[in-house]
Amino acid sequence: AQRKTYEETLECDFSVGVPNLARFRVNAFVQQRGAAAAFRTIPVLDNAPNASGNGDNPEDYQNKDYNWGPSDFDRPHIFVGTWTWRLPFLKGQQNLLGAIAGGWELSGIMRYQSGQPLTISGTTSIGGRRADYIDGVDPYVPEDQRFTLVPGSIMWLNPAAFAVAPEGRRGNSSRGQFRAPAYQVWDISIRKQFPIKGSVRAQLQADLFNIFNQVNYRGPGTNLSAAGFGS
Image 1 (cartoon, one colour):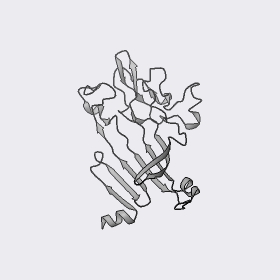
Image 2 (cartoon, helix red, strand yellow; image 1 turned 120 degrees about the vertical axis):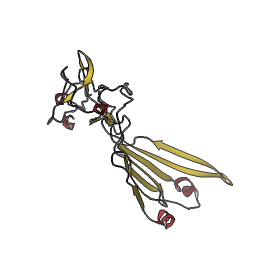
Image 3 (cartoon, one colour; image 1 turned 45 degrees about the horizontal axis):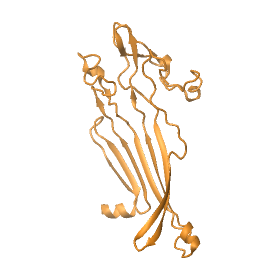
Image 4 (spheres, one colour; image 1 turned 135 degrees about the vertical axis):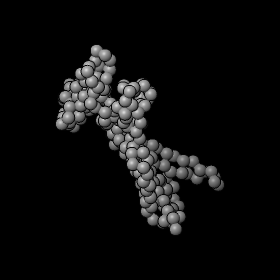
């Protein structure tokens, strides 16, 4: 029954695991028409980040829960969709026009994923420490101000939403509390096979990457005390 559903109809399957530890996954596709889609959310948490360089050496060694948060590679939402379309135009025509213009195939892939987790820090007289987050202030710069808030920079994080923690305590922001810009891209391919002799075929293919010229920004600076914070 599953095989028949797989081959003839739109299939949707999903699995749910342990909250905050396992994955929620959705798959949907029509095999005969070449369409496919996948969505997943995978919360991954730990208390020993690698990207920050401190490994299993947290800021507060007596309270490792203070370092608990999204893993450096955590991406809560990932969507990947693929499709293939065999163009019906002039297909099967046994003439020069059909040989050249018929039998083309168009395919594409779209990917969207959440941005990487960001941990905000600040430099004090006793070294770099987690920064304070000012509750009630939007940590992200509004879209219409990203190019004008700081001339010459594209701002993502709002400097007014953070402050260097006082030396008498640790910052109140949590590890990975904020997110870098999301990533998305569309790629398209067009191809055609030309028969040479017997089972021998030559394939002509053109690949167009990021066809909509989507701008994907890298992660912003996260040290509140450094030049370029938030951009």
